Image (tube, rainbow, N blue to C red; front, top):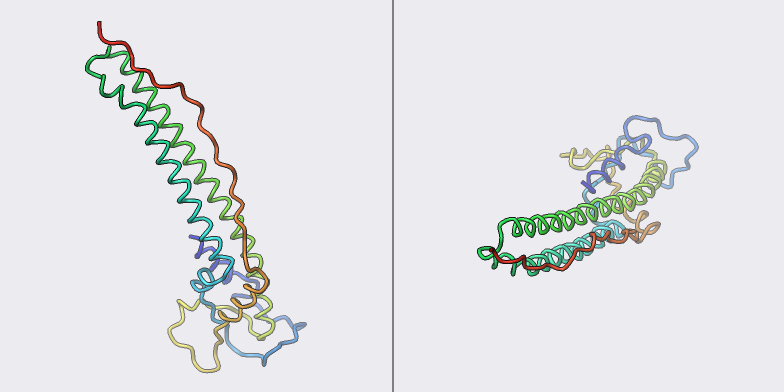
Length: 205
């Protein structure tokens, strides 16, 4: 998903389709006919800023997964005495305990869902920052090369000599120089409502 968004940004650069090359640009290299080839997969995985984003998200996911599993383990440990006493407990009281367990489990799952949503939004914000730089750099490379459009390398089987130029390395170099890192701004983890300590209900009468 993240990589496809980056690729879509690259290919959606102004002039990426068939717009004319800006006449005000002073090319740093001889003007070329044809197109610029862009490897969107490499851009998404080799740009230092995006690698940093992927790593930060992966680490945060590990932390949140551990917190989620710890909360479930605590809940199960707390409920185990009640589960073991089921046969000696009043049925209605046991059902109340089960309902309480289910309610807390729902809260824990709700926190996880909120965390995942917050992480997605934080990742999207970081990607938007990267896309802004990629757009600017892509425009500069097009102007410097005197070429009017980008083509995704996955759609190119063969490039006739003189018809296209692979701009991936050049774009990567410029993007890395301008944006070497992005800090993903993760919000604080929401908290579930505090639960009362578990109590084994009274025995059957």
